[in-house]
Length: 402
Image (cartoon, rainbow, N blue to C red; front, side, top):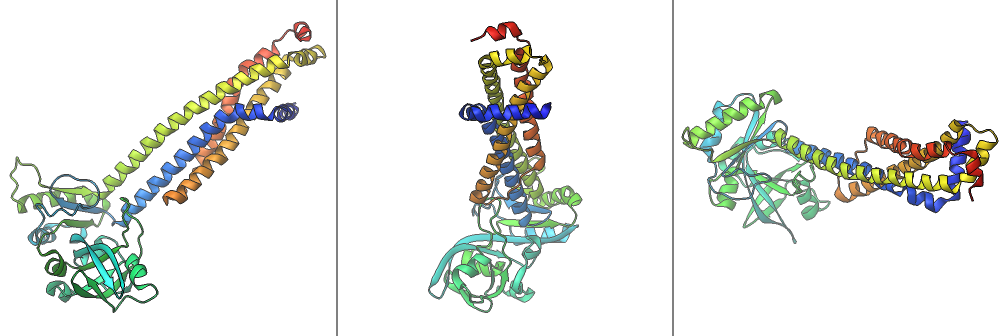
C-alpha cells in the first residue's frame, strides 16, 4: 500500500514538475545553507587548529607592551632583553625550550632574483619550540650563536622563489647589505592561522640579526614550549612572575607584557567559528520553515484540484486512511526530494568554498543525516493537515465538485 502511494506521489510530482520544483525550493535552500555553512565552519575550525598547532605544541608566547592578538606588529616599544630570557631559562621547569626572537622585513637577493621576506633572529631552541624540522642541512651551532656568525636557515618559499631547482644549502644569500651562508632548509608549513606564509622566512642567530640588521639588542617575542599540556597554567603563572620581577613591576601595577597560551587562542577561535556557524544555521532553519509552509500551501491547492478524484476513490471503497496516506506520502516525497537536492547543492557549495578558501573539506555525515531526516519531518508536519482534509471529504460533495 505504501509503495503504491509512493508511485502515485512520484507521478503527481512529475506531472507538475515546475510547480513541484518551486514548492521544494525553500527546502533546497534551507538544507543547502545548513550543509554548506556547517561544512565550511568545520573546515575553518580545522584550518585554525592545524595552523596554530604548526606554530608549536603546548606553546606560550610572551610579548612586551599592550595586550594584542595576532602576529607580532614589529613594534620595539618596551621590548624584552637578553637577561629576561636568561632568567626564564634558569628558573622555569617543565619546558622543552625557550626561544627569544625578533623579526623584520627585508629584501633578500640571490643572483638576479630578489624577494621581500621576514627575517627572524633567534637561537637553536627556536626550531624545537616552533616544531620546525629541517629537510636538509643543520641548525645553528653554539659557537655560531655566541659569535653572531653570518649563517642562516631558509624556508621553502625562499627556496622556490630564489633558487628554483638549485640546492640552496651552501649558497650565499644577501640579506639587506650583508651576506649569509645558508646552512639549512626548513620543511614547509604553509599558511598560518593569520594568513601569513610561514615558509617565507629567513632565520639567523639573534646576535647576527641584532648587529647586522636591526641595529639594537631588543627582543620582541619569547616563545616557551611546555613539556606537558597539563603544566601550561603553572608554567604560564611562573613565567609571568619571573618577568614581573625582571621588569620591576610593583605588586599593584599592571603587567607591561602578555603571556598567551596558544591552546586558549585556538579554543577561542574555534568557539567563535561554532557560534557563527550556529547563527547561520538558525537563518537556514527559517528557510526550512518557509519551505514547509510552501509545501502545505501547494498540498492544499492539490487537494482542491483533485477533489473529484478523491470523491471517486472514496465512493468505490477507498478508506480515509488510504487517502490520508496518499497525500501524506506525496508531501514527504516532495520534502525528501528537496532535502536530497539541498544536500547535494550544499556539499557542492562547501567543496567550491574549500578550494577557494584553501580549507579542509570537512563534511559531517551526522549533519547530512540530520538534514535529511529533518526535511522528511517537515513533509510529515506540514503535509498532515492537507492530507487529513482530503481524507475527511464527503464523497457525495466531492463528486459534485467541478
